[in-house]
Image 1 (cartoon, rainbow, N blue to C red):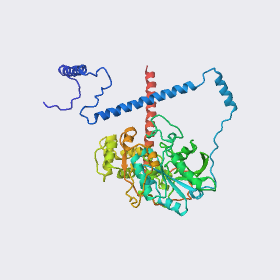
Image 2 (cartoon, rainbow, N blue to C red):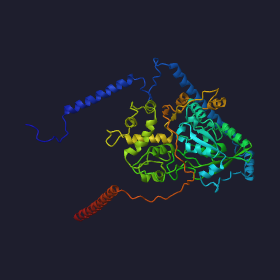
Image 3 (cartoon, rainbow, N blue to C red):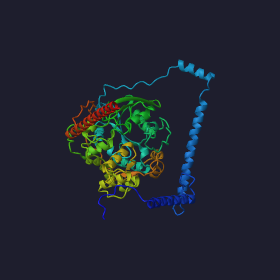
Image 4 (spheres, one colour):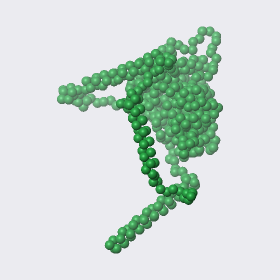
Length: 552
């Protein structure tokens, strides 16, 4: 007779139970037998199989491993000696030296640096440029073309001002690429001096690997690279000027390192610099107003003016509603203030939308992917594949790279089956913002002068470039995942609003969309019903207890 209904009992026969127990015991016996044969059964750490003999360049790999081990041991020994010397230099308890030092410290007044004050005669960038004798244009050495502004260069020629290109963050760029950029600027703009520069290690981000700052060691505030060449160039201008100290205006885009350059020249962190992991968006630039600073080096007095980042003309009339242009994306990526990967609508972006800083208009995938695709479209596909260990993709299809990156990083949509391309785009933007996306660019093609003997680089350039590392050395010591080469872009040609002054506005609370309001109202209604049901259940429980007590 066929079974009428589904079987509800889990009872089994004794034969089936004994068969299951027999299989379990057999599998455990087999595991114990294999564990006895395993030579690593006593250790929790797996044994290092070593480098196979069939691997090419085995001797070179072993030599590199031994050299790295030796370097780590040397650094450990130096740190131990420094700690020992510091402990020996401290005065012993109860000794007379300690009391003498206390008496001296109580009588001698410690000179504190004078506070930096704003100059009301320099209210904006135009006044700073008019007052300055030299314009120090700070740009990122990894991608100088993006930071160049042809309008500023033409303005310097019109006003007969001296201008110097300072290629900051040169320690993140390979040495051979730096040499190419120097040759490019010497050939295209021979009248403008170019100096590679790296700020003092005290002002380098701790979490970003740097070639000249060993891990865990802060070298100091006066170890900037290129500071001698910069001061020599400014001293030459001082000798040519008889009216008094030379005034230098430090200009450039936001987050190019203007304040850190002045701090390196001062040897103290007097000016506030932008922090990479900062989430606040109170202003479009860290330096709100031009800040004059006086520096005395080697008997020469120099007046520096730290200026705000460029604000381009016409940002008030930009139509940003559902209209993301190339300039919006470029400004958002280059300036990169705040957590751009988390700003998904106009309310969260705040004032950034008004200044063409963040084209994040909707909460859809399209907005986040636009920023990520701008980076992917400029990147070399082979370098991206090696850095992120993703499968091959078509360079004309950045979406395929985001899909592969989502699979590698584990970004999945609800259910775990479909890759989350938006999550992968946020991860890529976070790497860009935190400095974990190591990149560089080659200069565009140019024609070198052909008539007469002409050298694009000098011996002083070679001596300065020797302080920086090549691409192979950078990938070996700092960026083990590999560097990523970006395609160069054309310099910026938009005019700069020289009289722009940053203002602070309190943001009023924005009204919630109708869909979100309805969902919140539904949740409140459900909470009220659950609370009423709990109250009724408690009352019924109390009534049941009273009746039970009365019956007894």
